[in-house]
Amino acid sequence: MTISRFIMSAALVVAAVELGAQGQPIPAAPAAPAARPAQPAPRIPRAAASTRASVAVLVDSRFDPQEGGWFGALNLAGPARIVIDYGQPHLRGRSVIGMPGVVPWDSVWRTGANMSTQLSTEVDMTIGNTFIPRGVYTLFTLPTRTGWKLIVSREVLQWGTDYNPSKDFARIDLRQRTLAEPIESLTFWLIPTPENPPSTTFAHGVLKFAWGTTELSTDWRVGPK
Image (tube, rainbow, N blue to C red; front, side, top):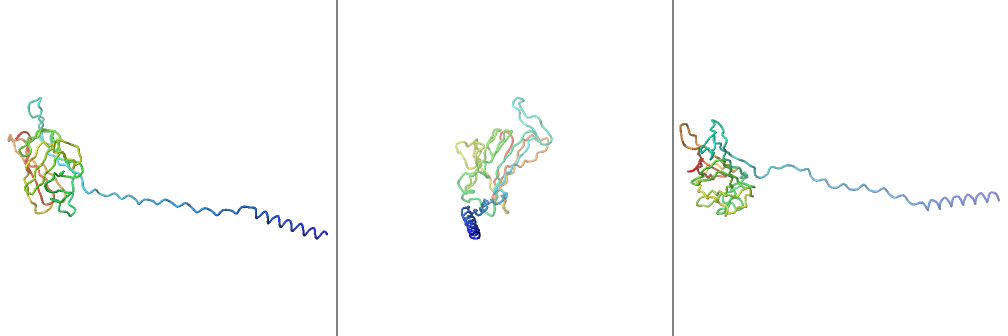
């Protein structure tokens, strides 16, 4: 009797253990780590397709209407400036003059890149045969197969392609020359003509710009013609 009860008790304990094991939840498998978001490629700085440049001529005095004349004469760089500031496009293997979308024939060209090309003059001056009062202007050109014109506009600080013909101040004929070697980057020059004392001629010279094998120019001078 005693042995039978011991065997039965052992069986009951084994059964209870098995039932307890069956009632326990099965542990969940560990979650897979979340996928990391794709990292953007590192940013590599690139040079823009155009640059910015300026050219200036310095006048060794300025005109004061209250004084009734020129004053402040210096022997070196003076207080008055004439400056052309422009976006500078590059050829990059192209033939640009007459090229649609770049310098098309018979269409007004910004004569630069990006923002409009700006002329700032702190003195009254004459370009070609046109008197330009001191101030700030925008320069455009009109290229045609029979000749080019420089357009001086009263509108300023606009995007280069935002040309408004109603703001024209003057249209000035340009001289044209074909260069033997192309100029890679659009370049402006304000070239003064040397004058030795006791010359009474006001500062003057040549306004010139070139791109590719085309060079355009006209004369400039301080004061009226």
